[in-house]
Image 1 (tube, rainbow over the protein chains, first blue to last red):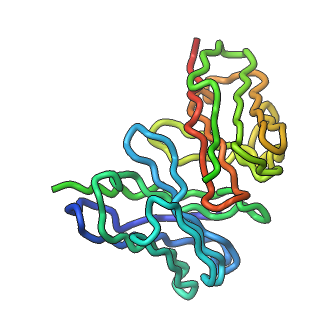
Image 2 (cartoon, each protein chain N blue to C red; image 1 turned 180 degrees about the vertical axis):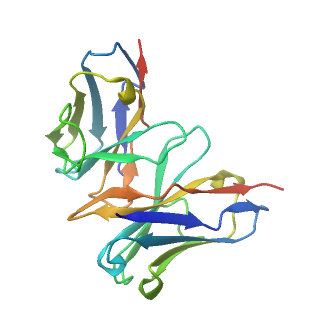
Length: 119
Length: 107
């Protein structure tokens, strides 16, 4: 069974940093593209970033480009999101999501980790 | 950035009735279009990928059609568990983008 579990969320002050982690199990982690998606309270879904299985290609939403960095450690079955220069508008539930077999659609999701940016 | 526009924002439907949700892309996404369902307090769930293929375990009452810029998600006979928010997403052009969602509520 494919499972994804995020961690690392919490309360951080504006301008601060946070590193999210996502551990995958039940599949060969290195073979799959991974994404980060967030959802602000009461709002819709926002795609944030993408990384290939080998980690050699990444893409970002304009809203986080230059502030957030996605990476992965396939030996640890782990995906990361380094978030710097955090703003109040970054407050959201952050989900990691795996591609669905041969499609880039997000077929498997974690339960999310909540990030709150506030002084 | 490609804009995905969903309509209507809210759809009121009685159980057992048909629901038709629309998603329009600001430029062609070919068939690289997914639909997700989200229940309150839960992570999204993939329903449809490639515009018309059902994900594993998704009931046959869910169907997706369309290509290019116009897409439709149809729920043929609404069950109680189908009342939720539905999002479309394009995965053709970077950055990938979601629509703003359609809430399907009980009439």
